[in-house]
Length: 103
Image (tube, rainbow, N blue to C red):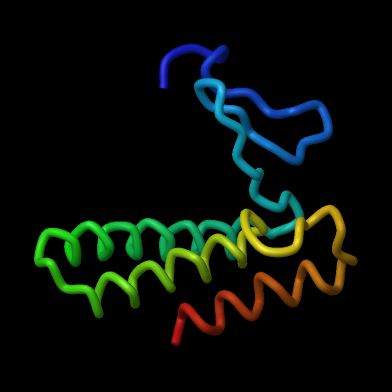
């Protein structure tokens, strides 16, 4: 991305705005190591979606999209907003996500 004007965080920290589009921010309470592992799972799942689309494999696409969703929920980017959860719920969310994705 070029320039800070293309990406900014809302004053409450809940959203990131990229090129005028608002996205839910990752939960800042997720510790660095688990967050990095979850992002790694997310990127691998996105690559799997792309490969499944190229292969026209609907089952693989469905499985990959499910992994994308799981990672995004664990990061707090989908599901119940992280700012509406208790500290215990937030920790359980990312721990459950890692357990599911690590297999």
